Image (cartoon, rainbow, N blue to C red; front, side, top):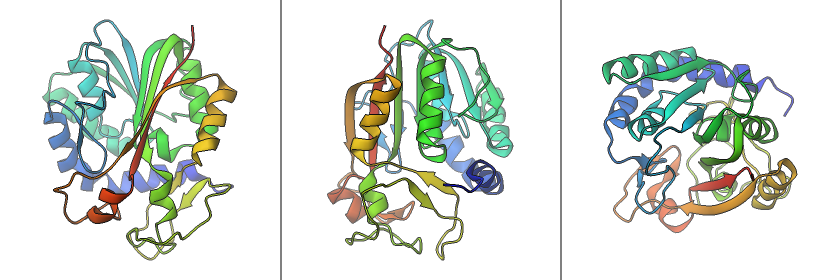
Length: 256
């Protein structure tokens, strides 16, 4: 990927921010949390520690900041970083409305400039996990975490990319691109709903990267749409997402 994906993705999210305000307002009110495109419940997934009292936590690619707020409600001191000023404007407004003390920073999750070994927990839901280069943002997450610190991230399952037509239309039952050497996709000039540049890897390449950096895997989850799901969300039809995993969640730890 030689294009300036950071500027592309920043401009994409700045331009689209107004369309996510309602979604953000609803998610700030969610208790308990629901995750991903189809709203999978926190119960059974355990993406967040139940008690985050006295923990320093960071959301990498925080967008409108609702995950940051969920962590604040559990007792954490939270920093959220995002490259989109317009998304952060929504996050800051909602933090003020909910009387939430969250340190929102405009910046690149690949190079935050924050002090190393300053967080106990890091998370990304469709933030850095898909819009930043994996080898860059994961190394930054490692740098930011204290020994014993945990990283959880949710993003597109490789199958959802493989089954997505090259023109950006909704996923179907055909493999449209090779799995070998997967890196992600450039959606900036597709015919249907153009967005930005997203990243993904094969499962074995994710695991190899974790090992190279030093992370240990503590859990891996594949998420499907619930049985009562209808319609199409984020170019994924519900019927497809009931049969194939639409998202994946990696749980990692930086060893002591």
